[in-house]
Length: 191
Image (cartoon, rainbow, N blue to C red; front, side, top):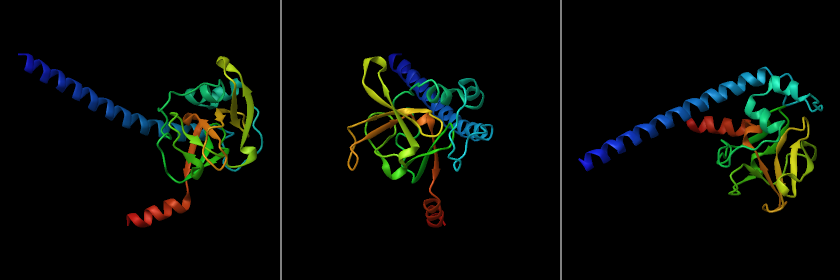
């Protein structure tokens, strides 16, 4: 009887685990489709326009998905190790998910073990702006998008050479575009 109960419990746990895997995969696809739709509804999103964006929080709330709004405009933080970009290693460029501003090249990304995507250098001096952050009794430096001032994360002085910096960034506020050359090489190898 005991063995039968254990087998039944194991079967239920296994079924539950499979259900969670399929849910996770389908919601990821739905999230990607939702992001594409959200970009189309976002009049300031551009990967080529470098003009500054100054919108009120009410205006941002109308064009950004809730999770992006929470982090970008309300200085929230996503859970550690929850970002799709944490273990991501494709070659390309990371952009601000709120406005499309280029932020980081993939060759500056490194595994820091902190639970958030980490980079040692922004794409340009103007792509990121800095502000002192004294919340929670800590002394930190906040990093924001240089175009729309979206909260991205923080920068710390414990990164690798050549800069010694670690830009610890919320993956929710990142958008990514694969490098065209890398994509072309990948497709040619596939055939």
